[in-house]
Image (tube, rainbow, N blue to C red; front, side):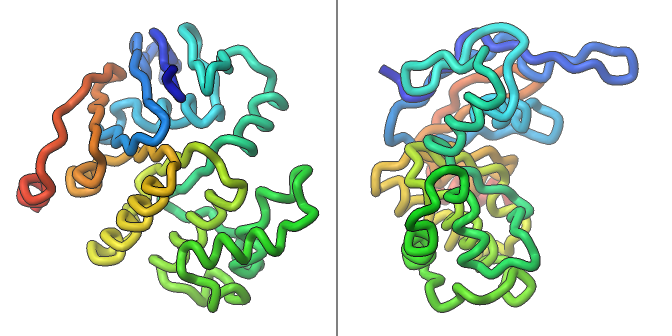
Length: 234
């Protein structure tokens, strides 16, 4: 059974009086332990798809089955519970609270009903991403790469089965981006399912499987060798 299964999902928005199908009869599945890239240009529907996969939004029609449960029609509170237990998020803009230390930012997801050992678990997550020595630093005292690692620590602190990353290297230089992608690789080797949304062929080349979304429709791609993807993106 697939860990994530999207079945004929449609999501429509109205913009300027016109109806736009951000997701147009989208179907695919992700198996446990996969590392998948969803690649597409701006406006292709990939962010909308990320919101559906992350239980941040519901499809207008179709089904999204997560770990055997149809989550398409759950209440907001039920979706919030699933997000907190099963999904870790990493965003392009890091989304760290500026007046909190690194360890305080990381422990935030644990404050919703699972806070008894929050500090210890946050410190362990910082060790996983190699930033235990930055635990007391605020985001403004950290480099872009360090901030993204803090964001990844926050994503893994609840020990989720799935990590969803939205343009995780978009604000990083190429070397730091490579380091962050290597970290995702390590997390995947530990058994976590990784789904990365990106427009960057070099980023997607780190994933064994690639899906392309354009105009709200999705198709499977054959992953190119990393050297070829780098050449295409240069």
